[in-house]
Length: 136
Image (cartoon, rainbow, N blue to C red; front, side, top):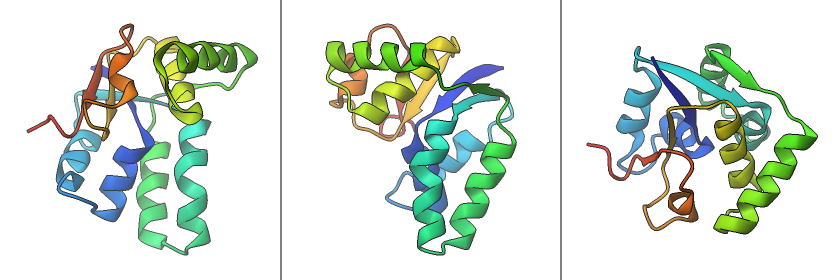
């Protein structure tokens, strides 16, 4: 099993059918050879907007994904400190640095994002990061 942390944008692409990456996102999410690792911060990033805008199908996809998560990274002071260090070192945004810190703390095999390879994510040298942009 490939221990995989999914960036929030992968879920958004899958749920909304956005860009040409929606089918790739759905393929990743349905891969039986992956064990998914996540955190409540990913939930916080995707669920509220879907609920606010009444997007029932989108919310259902999120709920299905989160119910199937194999391992949860707990929020902690240590996680936030690690995120702060990562954000400072690699130029990550606040939420992106939290996701990366969570993935690192869970010792994942792969972090998958929908960001382009020019994104600050790809400056992170201590984590294997893949992009839907490059997946075929």
